[in-house]
Every structure is written in C-alpha cells, then in structure tokens.
Length: 319
Image (cartoon, rainbow, N blue to C red; front, side, top):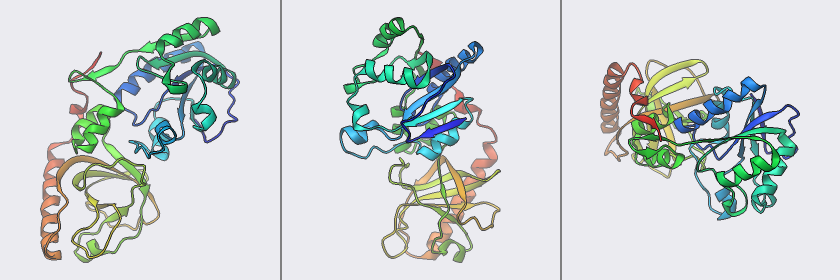
C-alpha cells in the first residue's frame, strides 16, 4: 500500500476506484464497503481510500475531536485491507469551503477516477451538501461508475464510528470488538516509568495516549499486547496512578504475563479485551499489590475460557 499524508500534490496516473470518508476506526461496515471496492480490481482499477489528515470538525468548530484511530494506527489497520493507495489529504480552509461538485472535480483530476464506492450516508463538500443523490447526478455528468453501499447492522442498529465510540466510552469492549472485527487498541512507543511495578514484583510497560486518542474509561482491563511479531497476554490499567503521590498524566500501564524484556523505545499495540474494574486509590502499596495479583488471576481465568474470538461476528447483518 502506498501512503500519502499531508500532501496536496498527489497525482495517480493509473485508472482508479475511490472510496471517500472519515474512516475513523476500521469497523465491519467499512470492511463490507471495501469488499465492493476491491471488486473493481477485476476491471484493472487501482483502489484508493481517500480521507483527511484530521477530523474536519477540528477546523469547523475549532474543537479537538478525539478519534478511534490515530494516523499511525490508521496506516497499520488499512495495510491489511488490500488497498493500493491510502491518502490522508490536508483539510485546509480552501478544502473546507469547496462546493461538493468542485471538490469531486478536483479529485477526478488528481486521481484519474473511473469509479466511486460510497456509503449511503456519505456527505461531502461545503456544509456537507453533497450526498449519494448528488453523486448519482455527477456520475452521469462525468461518466464514472458509482456503487452506493447500504449500512450493516448489529442488533438492529447501523454499524458506525459513532456506535463504536459510544461503546468504547462506556467500557463495553466486547461490543466494540464485535463492531470493529478486532479488539480496540492503542499503538504507541513505550516510555520509562517510575519502576513502581517492578518494585512490587509486577513489572509494567507504560505508554502515554496522545490527546486526540479516544480512550476507554479509567480502570483495569484484560489486554493483549503485540511487540514486534510476538503476542502476549496481560492486564492494563488506564489512569493517573491515584495511589502514588503527585500529579501524573493519563497512562496505559500494562503487566505482560511471562515477559520481562526491555522494550523502552519500542512501538507496541495494547488491545483492550474486557473491563475488569474501575481505577481506585489504595491505602498502601501492599493493598495495591494484592489487588493487582487478583486482577492477574481473573485475567488468566478469562484467557483460559476465551481461546477464540468467534463471538465477535455474531448478529451482524446487512441493513
């Protein structure tokens, strides 16, 4: 996959099929849409996923909109989808003010578009005035193929980034996993900590979520950790270390089972599988240690009974 980020001088000579959207969190609905996108490869078209380098809402209402997937995470998840080009285009003031048809004409010149695949709720252009009905008119006018894809549903509700976001914020990690098709995760570089876990005989790795990353509620989670090409079981605490004196930034602190290697400075992915309990201030480090050992026991019991993730895909239907 070729990846363009924060560049306006993007030009593709090969004929392409393009899908456009925010694509925040690659969920099962997106994957269903990609199935239709990839069908056009049979016609010799290169597949392009076009999105913006940051949420448009950041510029429109001057407020930070947290995301399910940061840009580095997005590159990782889309690598596995069979897409030829991932474009994260700068969302500038000029782009924000561009009328829907003008925006599409610009893309056609840059990307040599022969087909477009879009969801039925896709909106584009200034004030989001462009929709699938306008796309149908423009397809006739500019002679490109158009495929409008219906939503998938889970338990009677459309699968969307909004749905995923709601479940993550409520700590419903199993439902979030079902909607995504994989457990919700954070990808960051391991930072040095205060070595408190090691002093208690329970070593941990620490990562600091960027401010734009949407995090589940503070608390303890059963987790899975990927380090390079290896996968480990563990437990993770999201929080601010209330038992330790002082002010601490929001940190994901993970104890990796049966692992004691130096990973400082390495990129890791921590997947949040299931919520165990809320963050708590303990009266002593000994009390904290006892609770963490109980958390570890519960996590290992969970792992012994969850050998597959077959349940992730139940009750998902086409709308």
